[in-house]
Structure formats: C-alpha cells, structure tokens
Amino acid sequence: DAKKTTKELSLKLNLSVTAVYERIRKLEREGVISQYVALMDKKKIDKGFMVICQIKLVQHNVDSVTTFEKEVVKLDEVLECFHVSGDYDYFIKIFVKDMEAYREFMLTKLTTLKHIGSTQSVFMIGEIKNSTTFVL
Image (tube, rainbow, N blue to C red):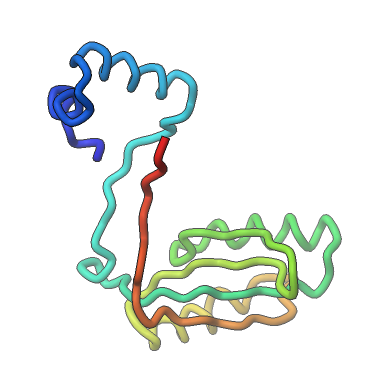
C-alpha cells in the first residue's frame, strides 16, 4: 500500500523509520519499484466486464507480429497483452461495461486490426484472486 507512511510501515515491520525509508529508496533506485499507481474499482467506472481474448495471427512473420503489437497497444479497452506459446499467439485482457460494449469493441476495433486470423473470447464469471502484491 503506497499510501502507508514510513512510520506505519516501520511499526508493522518492526524496523526504524530511517531503515524503512532507505529500503524504499533503494528499491526505487534499483528499479524494483517501477511506479506508484492507484487501483480503481472497475465496476464503479463501468469497466466491470472482463474478457480474455485469445488471438491467432494469420502469419507469424516479423511484419505481422510488429504491426499487430503496435495496433493493439493503442486500444484503451485492452489493459494487458501477452505474446504466448500454444494454440494461440496472444492473450489480451479487455475491460468494458458489459457484453454489449464488448460486442461493439469487437466489431469496431479489434476485428479491424490487421493480421488477425481468429479469436476466441473467455468471459469472467467471478473474480477469485486479483493481487498486485509480490512477497519479497
């Protein structure tokens, strides 16, 4: 929790405030902490419908891969994109308001991207675990 003060962290970790401050600064300098962000409640901003879309490209040459990647990162609805092995080439994580918004996204944005051969969508039924925490 980036909003906790060094004093709060020092009490929780049983370390001095100075030690906590220095450890945080070291983690920042070394790039272990790359940024601080606010996590939003997706439902409260009308983005509670999550879809994992599996994508196959038509071809796997450099042009197809780089063109697709340059285009997909521009889509606001896509929060994550992974180049994967297996039956599909990419998994993208999409957040929209509802099924109707997803259909609109598919028809007007995703399917207009070059080099997509096929897609398969998987819809989130329930969120069991969603963490941004790593134990160090």
